[in-house]
Image (cartoon, rainbow, N blue to C red; front, top):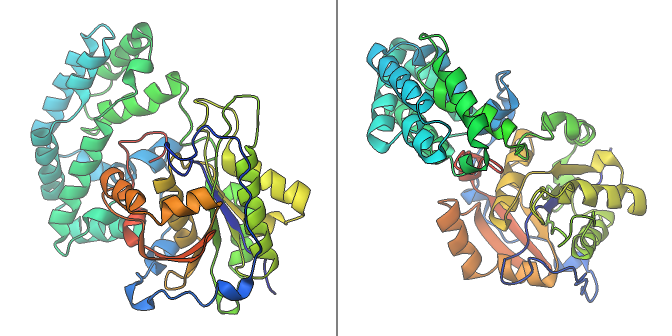
Length: 411
């Protein structure tokens, strides 16, 4: 059976200087031609093999742990072992409890600096002993430390622990908590059992602190597989060779006021992708875009674009995937790769990225590539070619699987 192409709509605007805050529809496609979009000139030799990540069954942990510090959850048993590290962290928790809810003080006490994170990584590496290879294999399959992978299992595990701790320790959101609430939370953390994992004080601060601050954007739609269930089931039976592209990805755009659900520009981008889906360019539409503009908006760009396509264009839910988390154009493409890889979509076939003229121009620009380098530390594609003023084809990068806990709203 042939399944329709899922549109991926992203959460962020094309660029702050270009289209953030604009509610103009900008639907300026002079006419769609399927013949102009295929074949896509990407080189399959540049592709990565995502089958291990597609087959990996993630452990059952809390939504925040799954999104922000999954490697620590995988290694929790080993992390109980180093006694010196445990003692140091319990002392840090006591120091945090004495901060009287002052955010900078708590951050200094419970966060890891580079030396502490290095020591923790090496301690976990040593504690794993004979199970080091098994732990490294699971972390590689999970993909959360993809950017850090290296042949040496011990070096990889230590780097994964180190980086996860350092990024969690930024705690840039901590000042959003009322001092009294933060003081009560640090008191509870310090009163916990001494045998808890060494990182428990920090991870509990992150998990419970974000909940107290009402910043649940990163977990609001978990488990995401349930949100995307109809499309995931359809993709499992899809013959991808029957399509020029494996998916259509569309970055979304948020409106400028809290009462508007869907920006006209987001609707226009969705309609461009709908035309390409109708023409059979791909089997699924992947919509990406979180709760971004304005801050704390109740509307997700991806969810509202899906509503538009289902209710006004008649696209079945089985043909739409959503990423309701992306907050930037950089993470639009990054998050799309993660969802498609874990859905078992082939990674050696091109993805079609469709948007309006302004955002498409931005995505193909040097400014966008440099922004990816600066904010992500990599580019979420290995090949990117413009096919029309509104469409690009790309091969995804394996580094896109790498989690970024330094951004707790879009890791």
